[in-house]
Image 1 (tube, helix red, strand yellow):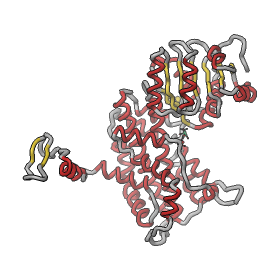
Image 2: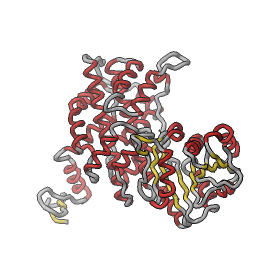
Image 3: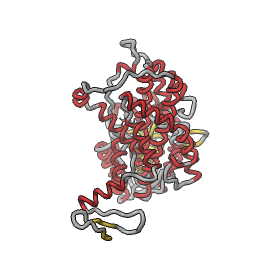
Image 4: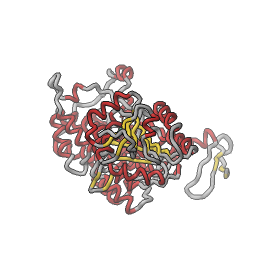
Length: 481
Ligand code: 6PG
């Protein structure tokens, strides 16, 4: 239905490419009157023509018409490309809004941009809500996971609408107020970083199965389908089975075998790693996953490296069943490490920016709708319910036990990968992280000594408080700094 005569819309969506269009339809299907706007009128008109029967839409030809068609305080969702396009739309919009109105950026904005925009808009009395939305086109239409930041006051108006259109798991909405300011976009960024790690780990498991078993894609599809019935049950494992079972209609070959092996990225994984470096959080799984995409796309380097020797024996696994079980255990353990690192990054960001993010609630809203939705997120929520300040997720009793149970298999898999020359950066670095974080003593002591030697950077001692320097080039006496 199209309303034009004076009936005001409860929420507006500007930017009607596929994500905005689907969010608008989702809102309308939930009974909200939705104002529509797009830079070109054709997109608005086609939405109304094709889906006008799904609810009540109020189309606006200009931004001014669009804003005028909204109830006060106005709530406007901006769904345009992250970056300059978002700034341009916001600049146009703010001139037409009034104090108390709410601007929601539901794109994949970089969280420092969100912080900047919130500051600028709050100076004009407007609420700016940077909101993570995950689930792709399908999720936007049928129920995404939604991660809004911004003021608690804005959430009172916006929250019920976003919760209504979000995915539900056990009747619980996959949406909650993440925290003030840029907290929502920060959490969405880390979600994507974890997504990169999860995808890389799955890809490494696939590669190991392929090379170790000499199996084709169809056989491995069956293994992933089986894995999707246990602890590993998740959207990404499910679609992996689906993709591997798919046959290319052009050649009749396995689809995965005709896809160019160069993984691209829009940047959210890179942002996660950059932010982790700034916060000093070792998100090694996410970093390796991001670098692995980079390596895959390093065409001249790969061409130059293609002739380098491997010096490995051909690989034929003797006990296929045991090997598949080992790879499954290694995948699960590595995945727990990657998620643990992501949640540690959320804790660090929350502490640094004063967001007060409840990590258990983040695991809860990721159970449905989003790309990393998985059965084991329930266990993460439980872990933080038991200890909201948990410093290390893999040290939670449940996760310590499951990772411990898979440890021998994990070591066998990483050792086999190294022996046979199969690159497994995420499996290997996750295991190295596990061994590092559990080690009673690290060789970092030597690094401190070296730093003091060449740069008088000082060190602390195990047996006494204080900061010390040794006079390495002189009498080697130790002095308190
Ligand atoms: C989601 C996805 C979505 C998108 C990313 C990742 O949560 O719905 O994460 O945001 O797929 O843009 O894309 P890249 O792999 O291109 O970085």
